Amino acid sequence: MGERAHAPGLGRIASDVVDFSTSEFGLVTLGSAISAGSSMMPQKKNPDVFELIRGKSARGTGNVVALLCLMKGLASGYNRDQQEDRLAPARGGPLARGCVRAVSLALPHVRFDAQRGRQAVADGFTQATDLAEALVRRGAPFVRPTRRWALS
Image (tube, rainbow, N blue to C red):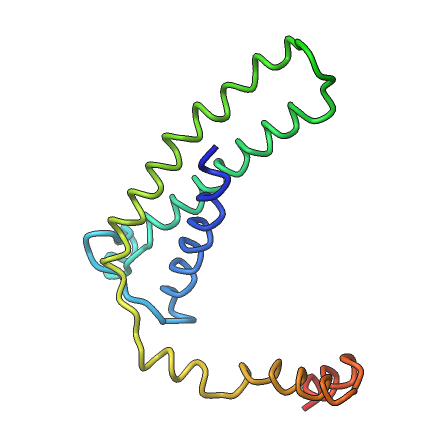
């Protein structure tokens, strides 16, 4: 059941790369070895590998949930429905290994744009939580600092 540990983490990494490679974020650039253009926009680099990993990670999580649903509430002893508990681990191992291999091969082809990253945090929005927590430490109810920041 290795996918229970790997699937969510790999899915988050993949989702971040997909999001960060969009023009809205522009935080990463994908190498040609791991991206594909589309027929309408061949210059665009689609994060195909990471989109597939994101989907496969959902299947890995689904395998774990299926096993947990099968086993919940079973009385101890022999139960014929436990025959179905072999499928999730049997599918999960190869799925998790394949995802780990794909991500480890693809990540070296992802380049982070440090200047764009610095620009993204320069607006000061990342400090709003720090300021709210400082006010809470001084005794202000959390609702008050968050409203103050939301209205400014």
